[in-house]
Image (cartoon, rainbow, N blue to C red; front, top):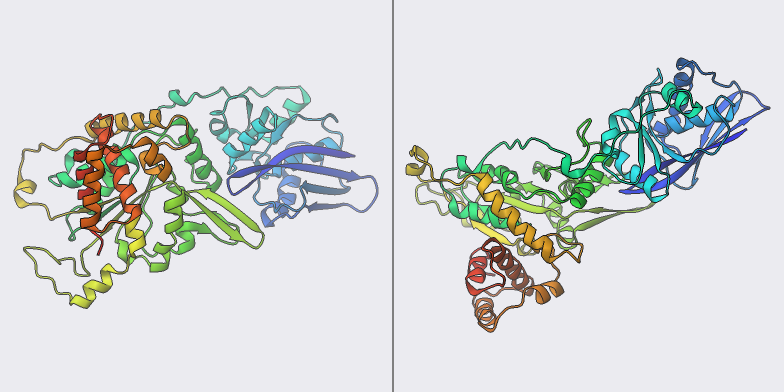
Length: 507
């Protein structure tokens, strides 16, 4: 007898429907074969399924069993096919009613029949909605992840025996209630607060601008000036994720298995800080079976690269295209996958190998050639793609020892940042972008018109600073963010002047 169950696979971040076909032959020696390009984890499901069926009180047929995972030319990976394979065997052997089951099934089985956590539940639940498979059966621990979607019925499955009774009509499984995005409340727990940082007002201002517009930032200063601390305080002033952004981020974390257990959706912007020994594949993504790298895990959030010049040059150069396009395409012999990579790059560097170059109090021990080689580790094209360049000076002793702090709290800064981001969301409501940093050249010309006075000012600035065409548009984008922070309807000369302060002159 033949049985068909619908499941799914995730290629990159795109879900694809997979039909699990189970045939039990009436003749032939007992065997259990899985075809359809299964990987090792899928091959091993034979033993998990066999034990789960027996330990659940059902009968495992001692006949020739053939399982086909269609489409047959798509590689299948992971243990998510355990549950549909087990159900297909129970249907084909007559232990479950022979009918068409209009639903999508996925889940890993333990030997006692319990259904365990599976990666990629959210994109596969989206597949169920897309294919009009409104009944989606997922592991009970992943119920909250799928319940964020509307238009589907999510059934949390605890064990093989529970879904057996559900499909038999004995004991129905209760649907998981829909979870509204606005009702998901997560405590805001940030490691650092801007109020705890003494001094560095200009750097805090640049961080506020970067957070409001999604701009890239490069901090350079001596050791101990607070570059790392300032970068790690940035999450406390970032704007909240929109529902669409949260779904994009959650899909990536769901597929990679980085979503916290029992979580429904990512509510806070990610902050990724890979070590400078990270490989190109670790940063960009890839591998034999391509998986997202750090830049995709930082999608809609922050990628912090401390000790920027210490990263291998070829690793940094691989950031060029993703920083421009907001996506990264990984090509292999078997095909190519595309991952989103719209991130804020926050980088930090010392001015020289010893860190004391330009310091008024400490003597630099580096030779001129050493300083030149150190600064040249980061290429000009990479620096040109960074909107804000700021010097982080050593903190004055008076500010460190003062008991009176006038530093503004992260809550107050975040309020201004959120208001500025809301203006941008309203401005870009008819497009797919959400921040000023994502504007294309055409959008900058259309949405950021400059007055005659502003154009004259920018002509003079470009001639004096030898700015590139890319630099010109990036200055206008930053000026637009500064105008949003000041609630100005148009970009004015003071906004452009402040934006140019964060732009280094071309050498």
